[in-house]
Image (cartoon, rainbow, N blue to C red; front, top):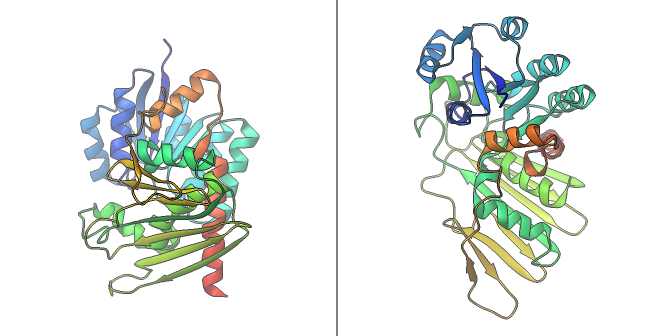
Length: 329
């Protein structure tokens, strides 16, 4: 079996370490090099057995023959890397959201489409069986016409929950992140709405620094989406104590309601006061995690589909951007 040669660009995204572990555990892939200018992060990466290290991603692309690039850099840094990789025929996978701005996301989308290479946006929510199957049920109109989707994500703040300074320093930079908690967490709801309903016709964003005086960006944000027959509510926070409310995400339809509660799907049907509680099936074969799905699509010659597709990522970014623009108007 031929193995896909994988390079990593950037180690400042906190999610990257779990993804490197996934690449190491999949026999179809071989991690051959990592590029990161911060020596301490390269030292941390040495424990993962990656053989070659570069301080410049451009040098890595020049010297290494790669099939796949795994990005783990700031939201604003991805576009330049993806464009260069696409020109070399290298498939790319990056963390959520797609970029810091819509223009950056569009340039990545178009570069990969032009080069006929795969581009995947990794949303960890897609690998949670209850969330995945509730989205599929909503799309299949198991609860009739969708009238509302609500999704809230958040915590006490990146610094407060113990994220690395290399991670939270750029999350707190609105140029590198795209905003603050608004971009960090409202993006998830935007992606769910984009996958289930498409791109909204109207978008209203509200964000503010409510509690963390040391920030130069927002610590709470809300994105409201308007569709012809539905509304979307996407909430994000860096000031929340305790977990999200019970039931998250929630899909409201004309013939029922779906809530994800403690890893199970609660299905409320007409004229009933108690839900049917569904233990979700495992994820489909070839979809156990981001790396599994990406490699399976490459092996089978299939395009990346679903919430992690570049198309959905671009729609989510467009709605986030319109929300940001609305804050200024």
